[in-house]
Image (cartoon, rainbow, N blue to C red; front, side):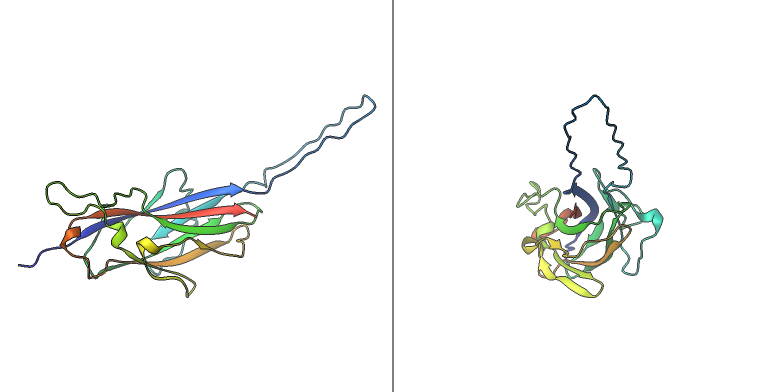
Length: 205
């Protein structure tokens, strides 16, 4: 009898942003009693990024797909009932994720980290003795327009991805992601599960 060794994966997209450049206002000294009124309009100096994603390697984002994904993450639907995606050893999950500079005119430097939002380490199921955490067994490949940025990198060796060139207002970055569960994963991870968070971070240069 063959033992089923399956785990479940759920995906989250999250965004964060930091305005590194600000406006400095200095006051001058006046020797008379005249008033000086200064009106500042910062309505077009807002800084914003949004994210989207789908478990479809041919997907392209539409205006309706974009989500703030902050402070709550945007969950990518992987199954019809929005439950976890079942992965067996040797299986793969292909998806696309995207981040857009939604600012009216400010440019943005983008970075991406792939995280386990709820790491459980070596915690085990007390009844079965099997591991609960699947994230550390996964392998990731990330490509940007055909350029491979991460090539079959195990979860424990993941590093942040950064792009040297800023995204201009209205531009977006579209990435192809492959998540693999190696066929070497054995019954110690039977019924293990994980969430995967793709965390985009943006800085206004």
